[in-house]
Length: 268
Length: 288
Image (cartoon, rainbow over all chains, first blue to last red; front, side, top):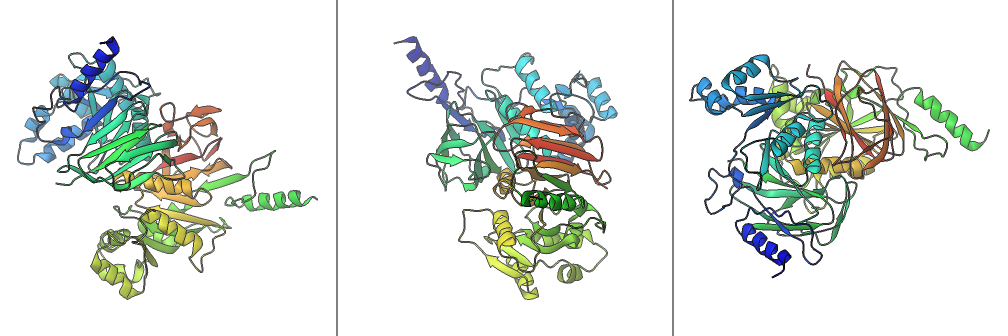
């Protein structure tokens, strides 16, 4: 078979494990499929989801995120000794402009061996941006072929921070990045791919939404939603898909524009 | 003088009161100025800020910002969007723990209207406000628009006895919670771009700066700032220019996927903005 066909076969095999990430450029006859699933919200990732996007192998705090781990992790385990919890939840790296992290928190993690990367001179990028570039460009010992970056605490608080976090999704559109809050998760659906989103109804949904970010979309098509799109135009100032409902186990999306996908996370 | 010059003179006089809102279309030589100020966050609105804006308040189904009683006081019309009524019922008394909850609910914080698709409001809350005379507008058949959208159209098209010539709609609980709700709220700003609508949470306020105007934003540093941001919503901006920010824009291009202005800082009492695209302005609200 032709080399291009051989590559296609490998791609399909990877995808059958639900976590294949295709890097192949758009083909004129068919667009590559990108699969999405929130298995990172399950207590254990099923073993047949190999090669999996395995549970976090690298944990970073973006500046004041270290305060949050220090203060709030022990509160999630009130029966346990706070000191033990903090040692258990030691970040590998703390990176950012260091204008939010408290001194005692910085000292605590430094003494435990956390790598501290001070980028206070760099005011052109957000702390999240700095962490994403670290993961993409520097992190040793991390298998980056099937990488997914999970971002905790991405929503709420100051609105400009939230928009900055959304912009990181757009600026690193070839990376899988998932923004997470208590209520919602968000990730980008790049226009370069068709998308299949596998819904884990025990942990997410049914409320969901699709919105064009940055540019209007002249044509988006979905299946699996209560109000499906059918070559529908979407733009801010006109129609965007919010308060939609997933109707089953799979949602498909294709669009001429990058879209944000969001789904509610169940309160269990 | 020519009729067009006469109108311009009147516009400038209105603007000298800082709150003129010009409806005249864009003129080739100069763009009309639109003034913005967060006086609705002050305990009292200074009397020399006339002609002042008429405020309407919409309460959404999120935790009430701590300054909601202040917004309620300034508003001449108070609506709850569906489950926002639950929030007023439950959370207003908690903001006044020394007072009798019943008094707080009945006399002081009774919404004029509750509108929406009614899938969130609790039955006892609905009954309570119905018995007090609140107008209930059930739009459960309409699944094409959000509850906030329904409330804004009510205010714009129906509300009697409301002076709409200088209207400003304040939306409490607009951020946080489900992300698709938040995006839906932003989209209401864009769909009603000729109305002044301010989205409010405990941490931030947001409003649209339509491309049809130059903008002057008067900063009340006792209650807001210094953190701020400007972002194009829906379309990239090929040219935006500002004054009064630590990192000013100078015919700068902004787009998602490229540069947007976040974590900026206001440096004084006034920020000016002009752009070829509708921008969202956001500024932090101080925790006092």
